[in-house]
Image (cartoon, rainbow, N blue to C red; front, top):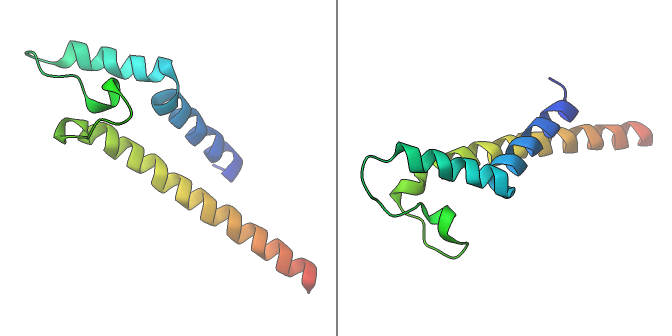
Length: 90
């Protein structure tokens, strides 16, 4: 997949799952139906300045994967830009 498509796919995932209310609501609905007994809601569902705990690990791992993919895209785009700049100098 080319860089543009990968960037759009990643942006869609991050904006849908982590930044947009609909994505957060979908994750919260899944959490509500998947718990066996009462447990406090995940930290990310309560507010921005709540300390994370072990129950937040799956969402944090998912976000980590997105950040790593963003890092790869950034390096790829930066390398291509530098090569283009150097080509213009030579």
